[in-house]
Image 1: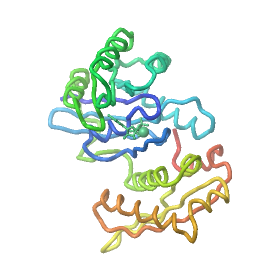
Image 2: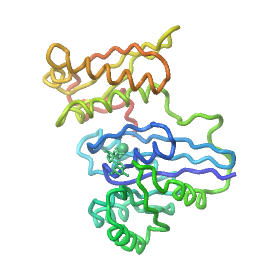
Image 3: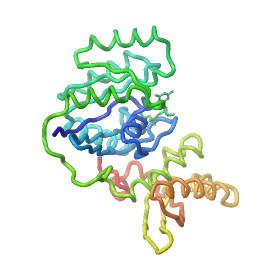
Length: 290
Ligand code: GDP
Ligand code: MG
C-alpha cells in the first residue's frame, strides 16, 4: 500500500484548481480566469485499492498585501510542510524565469516534479524548449507535460506520482473525497459565481459565509451571507431592483444542487463589514485560518 501527501504549487492562474479537479474527477475547487480565486488549502483524497493520494490545491503564491493574503500564504506553507511530493505547476505560456525564481524561493524539502500545463495551446518546439529549460533546474526530479483542462497525460502524471509516493497505510478511512464539510463547498460555489458575474475589485472584496445548511424532507435549505467591505459594493451585488443577486442566487443554486444531488432552497443576504480582509476576528469567523 502506498499513501502520502502531494501538493500543487504555482503562480496564480497556472491551473492548480483545474488540475485538482481533473485528478479527482470531481469538482472540488472553484476555477476562474481571474487570479486569486482559491483562498484555502483544499485537500482531495484519492483512494484506490493499493494507494491513497491526498492532493492539496493551494492559493497562488503572491506577495501579501492584506491579512487575508497572509492567511492564504499560510495555507501554502502548511502544504509545503507536510508534502511528500510537490507538483510545481507552470502555465507554459507564462514567463519561465519568473516561475523558476518562485520555485527556487520555495526552498522545498520534498522532491518535486515540474508540471507544464496548458500544453493544449502551444507548439511542439515551445514544449521541447520548456522541457529543456526546466529539466536542468535543481528542484526538478522529473517533468511532465499536461493539459489540466483537456485532461491529457494525466495517467502519466499519476504514474509518476505513485512511483514517488511512500509506502504506508491510508491517512483517511472511508470513501470521502475531502476532509472539508459540504458547507465549505457551498460557500465556494457561491464565491465562484461572484467571480463570474461581477467585475473589477468586487470578487476580491467579497467572501461568503454559509449560516444555515439544513436538510428538510424534500430539499436542503441554505442561508448564506455575502460579506462586502463597503455600502456601495452591497448596491453592486444587489443590482437594480435586486436583479444581480437574483441571477447570482439562481446560478449558484443550480451548481449546489448538482454538487449535493438534492433540491436546494437558497437565501442570500449581503452584509457590510468594513476592512474584513484586514481584521483578524472577521477572517477567523469566515474560515480563513491559514
Ligand atoms: P489556479 O489559479 O492556478 O487555481 O488556476 P485555475 O484552475 O483557476 O485556472 C485558471 C484559468 O486557466 C481558468 O480559466 C482555466 O480554465 C484555465 N486553464 C487551466 N488549465 C488549463 C489548460 O490545461 N489549458 C488551458 N488552455 N487553460 C487552462
Ligand atoms: Mg485555484
